Length: 122
Image (cartoon, rainbow, N blue to C red; front, side):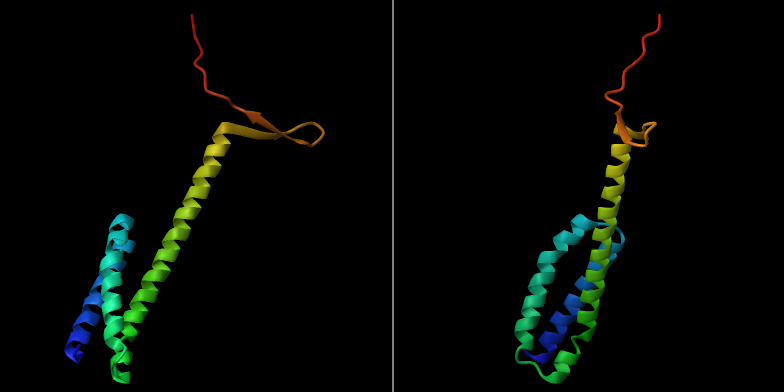
């Protein structure tokens, strides 16, 4: 592959990484996952082409590496945020199902709420 082809593939990969970043920032994780296959194919093609590349060609990959690392950091932060939200929802759900109190002697006691019942009035 000639230098022009390598640059074109590099530019296409950079555009894909920018699209992925936009999707991540908008919380479009399903669409982000769909972007993985095209990104992977472009990266593999570029890697094959650059095996015979000059040092100058390799230096031109810096923006692609930086964009990939940026997206990875965004994905990590997103994953951590989703995990924190799941933990918070679990804690809220657990609190709704039981109540922790303490006895007169200071021992912890869990009061289960059971299923809510409707009170019948005459």
